[in-house]
Amino acid sequence: MKHAWFLTLALLASASMAEVPPEVLDAEAARVAVVEKIARSTVAVFDSKGQGGGSAVIISPDGYALTNFHVTAPCGPAMKCGLNNGQLYDAVLVGLDPPGDVALIKLLGREDFPPAEMGDSDAAQIGDQVIVSGNPFLLAEDYHPTVTFGILSGTHRYQYPSGTLLEYADCLQTDASINPGNSGGPLWDAEGRLIGINGRGSFEKRGRVNVGVGYAISINQIKHFLSHLKAGRVVDHATLGATVASAGDGRVAVDDLLEESDAYRRGLRYGDYLSSFAGRDVTSANVLKNALGIYPANWRVPVEFVRDGQIFEANVRLASLHHEGELESLIEEEAQKPPQIQPPGPKDEDEEEGEGDEQPRPRIQLPQLPGAAEKPKLPPEVEKRYTKRSGFANYYFNLQQQDRLFERCGQWKALESVPHLVIAGSDSLKHEVRIENSGTEASMRSVRGQFFAKFDSLDTAGDGPPGSGGLLAAVHQWHKLLHQGREGFDELYYYGQLPFGAGLQLHDCLMAEDEGYTTQFYFDTQSGNLVGMEHFTSDDRDPCLIRFGQFQNWEGLELPRRWIVRFGDNAYLEFGVESYSNAAADKEKSETEEAKDDKDKEEVKEEKSDE
Image 1 (tube, rainbow, N blue to C red):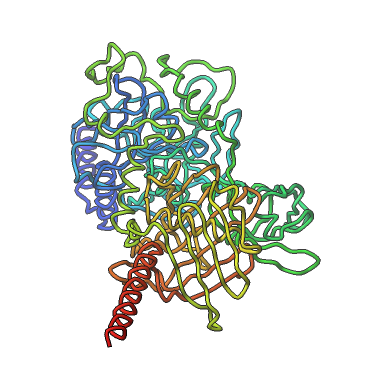
Image 2 (image 1 turned 180 degrees about the vertical axis):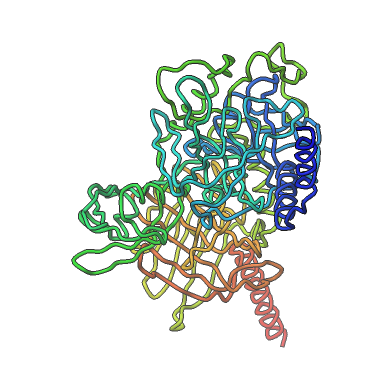
């Protein structure tokens, strides 16, 4: 018996000394390296009193981080954020996407934060290995994230709002543990690339414990919204202005349609088969909801529909999903919800919801932050970076984006010393084109005729000349921007990036609200030039669209030599500019020249008289 015992020990020792295959060691080392990499970018989020919170992920060295709307809502504009280096940083709210349950915050105090590597959520496939990191139950007192592994168990999932405005469209599903406190944290692929932001989970009815079904907002959806969030805005999602119902054989037909929608103006009608939306085949109503849910309002997408066997294609501008005031009400409602301090306990039924504002179990001791006993004031660094304004999560960041545009734009206030602008040129057939604009009136002369507008208000200017959609009013707004800048409008703000032009390339968009009318100015993201604009005379009409090209230096001013004007699907006018001038200066010059001519004539007359 003693011999057998020693033999067993010898065999165990021999087995333990057996060589581990190098593939196993390499895989283990790679996994450890990925975990170390993702842990640096994972953020533990607390409110300013050290209570509630969730998780986030850093996406840029200057501290921008993504999280859930329902994580930030109870926190207000200020948060505390911990990293795995053990340091706690102040953070300020930047932008909100309430329907999509996304928020953008900015950590303060460094310019070298460790950002996540962005992935491509559309490339993720069911069965792929994925990783979740975050702060479940707010366990991370030292701010080191909890890491769980799993697989991607579903893609393109649609989660209904369920009594709230929060809608998870085109989301990713995983069996990796997403528990209360993981909300707002990252979902990674096996290489440590960010492919989603965790938000919802399904929980067993006897306790808030994950049962293997969690949902993450895809990073590709968030990429569409990111510039809008950096603008400090409260962002809305999009609607087509039409709904569809199954027509059998994998087809859907339009069963409701708003006649004031852009889809209707582009030709979509009741009964049409909607075959493609933004490059996706539409085979069910849920497919359309998924595709719609990843775009912000005002986005343009290519749409394909079929009528009587004929295929039609159009680029459609998407409208806002919610009415004015709905999102503000949601924000106020979420902000009033206190952090839930009870530990996981019995529930009446299974639940599926966002869980970012959970407290840990009572035995867990949260970090004690300054001012936890009373409602804290904003930290000085946060206060310097927070400006409250209706319609914005943080208007401070919108001003920053406006300044960025103005610094790069060669046309910004280029006409500051030109109160009465004269544009002289000709069309392709050498017909004269002459446009004048002052602060009170405008006129245009072309092969189409001569037209005038008075600017007692934009309303009196109307949409003339006929067929242009409001060209004279559009020129008036363009001149105002280049002459007066911000001061010329009731409201001027950076909107974010939107598709513009024939190729639907992304451009920075500056939105002007003036006397109840909207004008959108588009800037090239590379050169900074103001390359286009749209002036809307009505919400249910196409705008007057102008594209500017061939920028050249003109007496020290960087101005376009080519103008293309469209209204709806029709070209109105295209012309080349030969000169920009100041009518007041021209008049003064003309009067000076006339006076000189008169003087010369008088001198000649006197000389003849003397003879």
